Length: 472
Image (cartoon, rainbow, N blue to C red; front, side, top):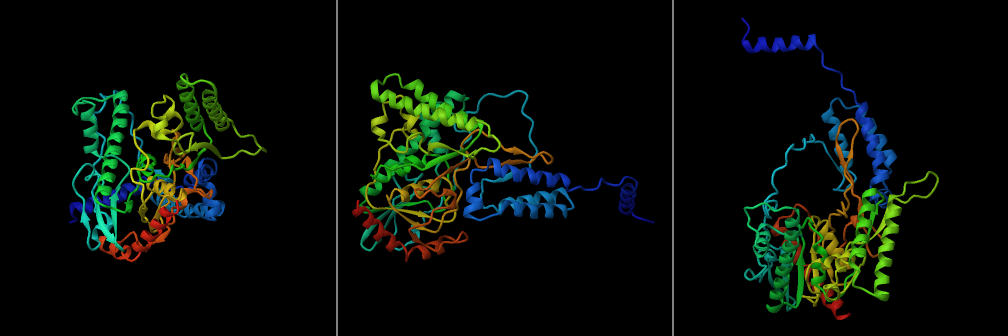
């Protein structure tokens, strides 16, 4: 007598014989792979870096992908193969979201309360905290957000301030909300959210300034900003970098992939200038309107369709990561209604050179995105010494409202970077930041190994930072 389980298995087997499953067909996946290949040529900001700097032949690579897809036997295998192929591009901003698209809610609820979307960050000690003689500075304003301390190297006091991520956490957000008298249990609409966002990063800026002042008051002669493990965050990095040097930094040039969304962004910047220039007269007004006109010209270029047989550059000059101007005096623009239209960092109140002495920036293979923006700006302006291992190489990522490429057959959403930042030598920042003083960090290192690798290289970085500051 057969068991119930055996009978059930037999029944399922008979059902399979009666109604065979549809045969798997890899052809739609091959078609999607060709769509990805075409999108890389037409919408990928880092195409030249990929094909020239890295020397990758996309045609050859995607022929291999198609051959691999032809041998797959399931959708899961095909998805995995495409994921591996895109991972081999070594650009973390290039990926496919295979998850089902959730239907939009029929009725939207009230706006979320203030700070509801803020995520707490897991704190980690600064790398230098394991060095002999480390003295923590764990009290005072900004101590929680920017942990640090002092350590002596070659009879010089090194002040260490860690930036674990270029974003604010819930505590900073709640402090900003309290100053705006926003209740944390009431909805915060779009206008409220914009005001809160400005207040949050002003709060973070003030705490960073206080932390730098504390380190200076404690007798630090050299400052080390610890960006090891910092995966990026917001463009607040543009402000933070300018606060740790007295040099008037120039931001990186930015290029956008030509698209209607890039054009809209450039037009919006021009409109901001035009709408806020009314109080100016004469040459000053003419210069601002000329800036707006140039932005309009670039927008028209970004919006114009390519004509077969004519040169059609993929990338459009979009100014700088700080806006239309690479550099400016924040105090001179602070009371100008058009100030943030030409130099976005003046949206907040801050001061250049809160720290003005010798500077070291510590990075590793997990320092990415905004961390690389910070480190590259310091290095390209010769404002400090970069210490550590080469950074991840995440590049600019996404700067416009251009959405993903929806794959025709699978429905996967292909995300492609639409911007890049250029280094002083003209190279793409996605190549990563090469330290001035190399440390053999590995991504698998724990705190003890990191300290062991850092200790013998830190004195050289200190000597170079002191010499660089003295040569100004």
